[in-house]
Every structure is written in C-alpha cells, then in structure tokens.
Length: 401
Image (cartoon, rainbow, N blue to C red):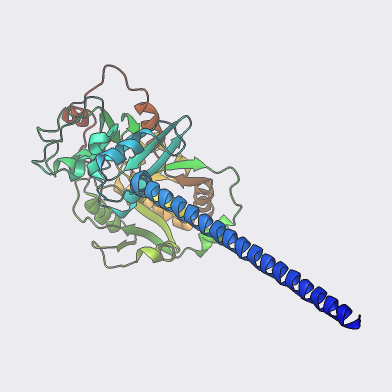
C-alpha cells in the first residue's frame, strides 16, 4: 500500500516536471519569435530610412543644386534640364523669372548682385553664370568689360537685354564701346543716369528718423587738420589735379593720400585717418550728368564735410546745407577763402556737421524693378541705339580751370 502511494507520488512529480519543462520551452519559443519579429521591425525601419535619405539626396543633387548654383552665382555647369526646371518652378511651386549676368563685373562687391529677389507677387533668381544665358528672361551686359571685337550671343526674341554701366561715357569710349555689334542689341538701360530705365546710383541719402544727439561743437574743436584727398588716378579729364594745385596755392593745406600723394592709409584704418580732418575733396574724374560716385557718399560715414566737384546737379540731388559745392564759387580763390573762414568759425562749421548728421547713406537696388518689369514685357519691345543714348548726356570739359 505504501509502495503504491510512493509510486503514484513519483509519477505526479515527474508529470509536474514535464509540464514545467514544456512551459519553459514554450516561453523560450515565444521569446525567440518576439525577438525575431522585433529585429525584423528594426531592420525594416532602417531600410525605410536609408531609402528615404537616398531619395532626398537624389532630389537635392538634381534641381536643388541648380537652385543653390543660381543663388550664389557659382560658375557650375548645370545641364539644361535642371536649369529649366529651376527657372520655371521654385521650391514653393510658383513661377519665377531668371536674370543672368552676361559678363559679371570683376570687383568683389559685384558678388552681391546674385541671389533671390522676392518682390511682392513676383520672384526672380539672379545668376552670374553665363552658361545660363539661353534660359534667361533678362540678360545684363556690363558694357565696360566687353572686348572690342566681342559679338553678342544669339538670343531669344522673348529675352530682354539690359545695358549696364557704372562708368561715364568718357571712360566707356576709352575701351572702344560701343562697337558695331552691340549698337542695337539692348532693350533697357541700367546706369547711374536719371534717364535710365532702371536708375542704379552709387548711393543715396536718406533723412534719419531719430538722429543721435551729439556735441557737434566739441567735435569741431577736436579737428586739427584742414583737407584730405584720397585719389588713385592722377591725370583726369576733369583736371581735378590742376584744381587742387591751384587751391593749394591759395593757402589751403591738402593732404593727398594714395598713388598721387605722399600719405598712405589702409582701407581698414580710413576712419582713424579722417578723424582729424575738417574737409574731404569728393572730386570726380569726369564731368558727366548725374555722375556722383562713392567718393561723395562715403563722407557720410565720417564726421567730415565733403567738398564736391563734378558734372551732377548737386544742389538738386542733395541737401545744400551739408555739402560745399565748388560750382557755387566764381573762382578757386573764393573757395579757398571760404574754407579758411570755416576753419576759424567753429560755430558755422559745427552747423555743417549737425546738418550732415541728419542723413544716412543707403544703396538702392534695382532688382525688384527689373523683376517686376520682366513679368509685364510690352508686345512692342524698345531697342536702344546705345551710342545715340549715351550722347544725349555727354561728358564735357570743366569750365572752372
């Protein structure tokens, strides 16, 4: 009886162990299946991610690279399909126009003449890559850098070609422009002249809303030098060098900086160099209508009074109370006497500084004007005879020497 009970107990224990072992196998199997499924899920996510990045990379390498090329003006050869798609559709899905520099100017500051022009309802891209000319809506040609025998490329009748030049006609003719190949290519003009289709001056003056209050009398008293002149072209059609010599002969102390004088001043130290001077000679190299260069505008970055001489109507263009115009004096001797008087009359000199301090310099940009006009091109396009247009406002010889 006891032996039977013992055998039954042994069987019960064995059965219990067998059940537990089977449960363990089942749990282990479930764990394995779960791990396998989880691993597959992670691997699937990784595959999806890789595929997504690959598609995104391919997209960027096709059209978005072209977009960046236009935005920064890099000279990258872009195939016609890509440039065409970029020209017609921007990243927001709207239509836009493409403006291309036929021959971008060499100065470093012209690198800023590229990018995106967002102009209200209209949008334009500006490129310095000449390979984009065939796809352009507007083509800007820097006339000063055209070679004498250079011929214009064939272009679509739908394109607008724009004559651009910041140099006066006297300097332009010195590089043998216009040639017979370019005389009637242009539809629009982009220059400093007031009669241009798009006026692009070297600068502009704007009245400050809240001018900073300063002790102008103290600034006037701290001045210890008379006149500064920064110049690199020593022989000009305006004969400014002759004018300066005569002004010196009437007792005006003029420190000449640059190639034409003995004084030197690195560009980075310009503020320190001009700090002690009362006057600055902003004399142009040519007497031409509307021609006012950076020589004048940069004086508004310093506490110094500009003395101007050129072919522009300064009285009409700028506030008279902060500019001394040589044209207001019958003789060079009269100008010299006036400058000597201002050096002694600090109250009057300080009033010049105060008047000048109400204005700031700005740099108007024409890109939105051009962009908006490209969306409204007239059916009958105008073509300029550039040589005739240039001669409407010719440069002339000075009459004050």
